[in-house]
Each structure stands twice: as C-alpha cells, then as structure tokens.
Image (cartoon, rainbow, N blue to C red; front, side):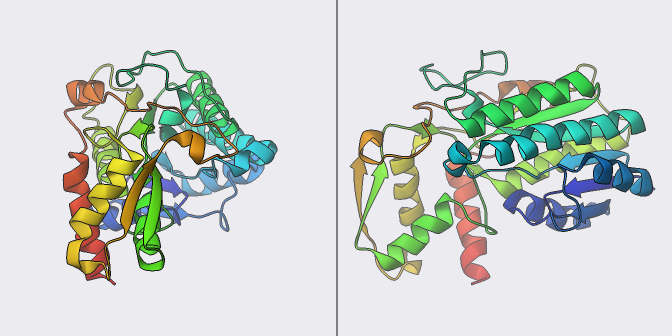
Length: 296
C-alpha cells in the first residue's frame, strides 16, 4: 500500500489533510513538531527511511509574519532548511514532495493578480524565508509540487476569520485595513486539492508537465476590510452583536513587517494543467462558518 508522510499535522492545513485523507482511505502518517523537527536533517532522514513514504506533504511552516522580523534564524530554519531537508530525502527515496508557499514572495506592486512566472520580491523576512524554501525545493527535488497560497483560514487554529469573530464579541468597533488585497483561501479547499494531486501521483495518473510551481488560492480577490465585512454578513445572527467596521489605510495599522498591497494570485495554471481550482472565496467562507458554528 502506498504511504503519505504529512508534516505540520497540528496546523490548520494539516488538520484538514488528516480529516479528508480518511475518506480517501489513504495511509497517512501525520507528524507534528513534537514528533518530527524538520530542521533536524538527521531526524528527517531517519523518519523517512523508517516510514518509506511514496509522497511527502509538507504543511509545516514558520508563519509568524511579524515575529520573523526579529527571529530571522528560526524562520529560515523551518521555511528554507526544513524544506530542503524534506526535498533531499524525497529525492533520495524517489518520493514526490508537495510543499506549500505563500503570496508574500511578491512585493505587491503589480496591479493584476500574480502568475507563477512573475518575478518574486518579498518585502519581509517571512516572505524571504519562504522564497528561499521554494528555491531549495526546486534545486534538490525533481518531482515536486510547490503550491503558493494566500490568506489561509479554517475551523482549526489561529486565523483572520476566527480573530474577527472573537473581536466581534469583545469590541463594538473594529478597524481593518482597506488597501491590501488578496485571495482568502479555506484550508479545507487547499487540503482537498493537495490530496487530489496526491492521489493522481500515487496512481501514476499524472499529466506531463504536472510538476512545478502552481498558485492555489480561493477564487476572487478582496481587501482585508471587505473580507471582514463578508465574515460578519455571513455570520449574521450567530454573532451576539454586529460590530461597527471601520476601514483604515495600512499606514494607520503599523506592523513590524511590510505586507504587499496586492498579493492576489492567478490560479488559472492549476486549472489548466490539473483541472483543479478552489471555490469562490465567499462560498468557501460560508461553508467554513457553518462548520465552525455547528461544532461550537
């Protein structure tokens, strides 16, 4: 039986991969940081030798965008060195590596959504570390899929949607940035596409030219303010109260790391080559909120 190794099992994406893999009857060995530190090259090699996976899904990442500015070494250890460690063992084993990256590899100056071939230019340490991880994977692993995604949220873990719902309970007034645009991506949709790609790989039903870098994000783009507005609209009466939402420029919400003004991703290549695409972001958001409140 074919085997899949999943890293980052406790994150919001790893959580969804585990949940959905059961329905596909995939043999997934899910490891979190306590059972596999991907920055430890020797430990990674030993785990892969013992488990002998046919495919590795790397959902482990350092994602603290602002903290990375003062914690550069840790960000690069996970996002660059950890990615390289997994790529090396995947290549030696002959396994395929699915690795996730970010819209923050771009500088945000382009007015249109970014395509895979656009020049990268990260504005902060987090984006730099993820771009370095991409480069390491491409250099080391021949059979890889790098899925760049953006603004990920889900029912599990810390994310923008859950933060907005918490703030709605705590505050009467919430200020949200209006001049940064991106593509909200439901972790469940991202996990589903990664697993669909995995099944194709494991069955040997993979298209020519199917490896490489692909953008994989929710369809449509919106500002953080527009995203928050839709969250409150769809949550509706399930909120104890509707807060007043005030739009502000990013200049009035200073952060340690600069963020791209536009990080929207054009995902047409993924659809063209593989026939997969995430849902329109408001549709996916509605599903996520239904799940969240049902399990509350």
